[in-house]
Image 1 (tube, rainbow, N blue to C red):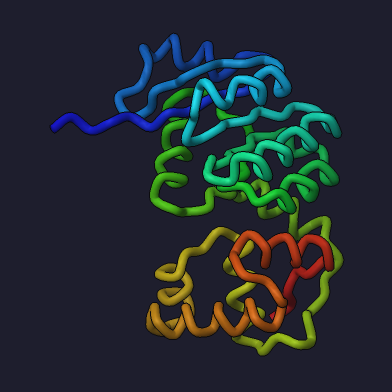
Image 2 (cartoon, rainbow, N blue to C red; image 1 turned 90 degrees about the horizontal axis):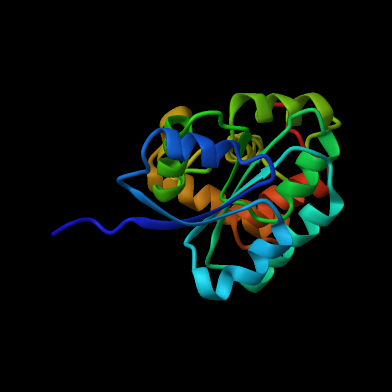
Amino acid sequence: MKKSRKRILIIDKNQILKDAFVKEMASEDYNVVGFYKDVKAAFLSLLKSRPEIIVVVVDSNDELVVRTIGKIKSQFPAIKLLVQCDLDYDDLIFDLLTIGLAGLSNISRTWESMEQILHDVDRGVYPITPAVTRKIFESFQLNKFAELSTRQNEILRLMIMGATYSTIADKLGISRETAKTHMKNLYRKLQVHSKEEALAKAVEDKLILVI
């Protein structure tokens, strides 16, 4: 049976990804249900287009775009949001991280690189490129959250870098179930209920962890 293609919608003022998509003759894995230059127009189309993933290319520190992305997330929580942005805007990156994205990366210039990131999103991996990670570590005040154990600090740091249960277990030399237990205790101490909320807490409290 033929595999159904994921429905994605792309918001890109400069149409970089549209040009790349057309040049590479579409995609076997993704059905692009719309290309939009304007984020508000894209928002109004969602009930009709019904995308599973939205890719937003943000090339300026535009508060309206960030607010609309947040509105999409709050009104259509099942849609996965992948944002690609200009890394020169530190405040923009931190605002975006609090929304609850499925991924944050620098801007793709080819459809091949875009698909690699989309495949990560499909697998439940939080794609956050090294350039974005470096920006976060460079710009946040370095603090250790006193209520967390050393191991929980390690786990939160790995979560910020996009690690999964399995990756955390491998890096720390523990079982996947032990990693899950640590993360549940971490959520309880931070008074959050998900990876996205833990990341938002780290952003809000400027928690980059010194191990």
